[in-house]
Image (cartoon, rainbow, N blue to C red; front, side, top):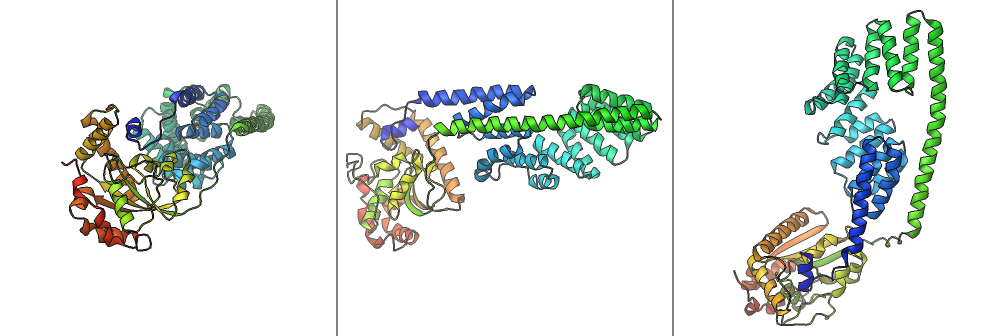
Length: 483
């Protein structure tokens, strides 16, 4: 489709795809390798790969999300917030990003904030888990129980769901039920230290001290760095009168905790320093960002190529509007009265600031370029609608006169054009910064006088001082393709 519009003369020549394809392939490979490393718990190795993938494919929102997940896991919460900031600004209602923001709040200990951030989010698996764990941290046992059951309703084989349910039941004081949920969790993941810990606590609550002590020992065999198990095991030992052992276990845990904290802080400092150094190296060779765009208002004539946009521009000129045109595309057999185009607008995808030169004038901007309009501005858009069959025949006639081949079969081209217009009109119609008037091309040609007042009222006398003279620009004989 892009090449089709290039051949019609409405887009710049497409650049060589070799470099872009290489960057996209590199980013995809890095992201896939990083996903494999994350699945193996090797987050530290995945981190630089995801940073490089984001740099190679800056337009992909999925890679920053993966990067933020990795940063959160490593404890680099501040870096994760910086990673997500651009996405949250542009896609504030996207559930996946809201889940990431809730996860950030959870990691910072803001459990109420995590719950608040998940309000209205559809039941994504990670959202369910963050909600359940936040409720546990807030000691809201009954809703935590319900949240765990919601996880299990989606996946009865979730060891996480059974572990969280066991914690909630233990919090509610039902140690027997907690043991049953633990049994289900360990049947799915026998080495899950979270479930083993709940089992040890439940056994303690039931006064089964010897079994509890053995369960705490099992927790420490699976996860020797899990400090709370040392403290609770020492308490269980003391209940059995084994004070010397209790003192030894508690001291060992405290020593380990101190070493862990020191090691963790050093590791976090190293990871942050390395990550910032890589970012500095990338920034040194990155082209400077474009200057900020000053918000303004623009008037556009849009529609598919050959939908009547040139006629509308001719009518606006007749009505006294000032239009942005450079005269580079001269009148020809396809458009004997002229295209009234501005060649520089084709640079819009690469240089959004180019539009600023057209402030106060009417610009012709066809559908392939609409997605590249800067979001900072407001727009009044006259959108031309013409039967797709007429547009396709007119485009093919234009290609034939230019000696260009047909790249797309007629029926497929019509289907794609219909889908493009439907999507664009839906987006424009719901956009708060767009005022839209859809102009029916066949009706305009047949009854130009009936449209003059509507267009004049839409644009206003300041832009269109002589609206009634617009009708003089309409020549029905130039509508050579008819349904």
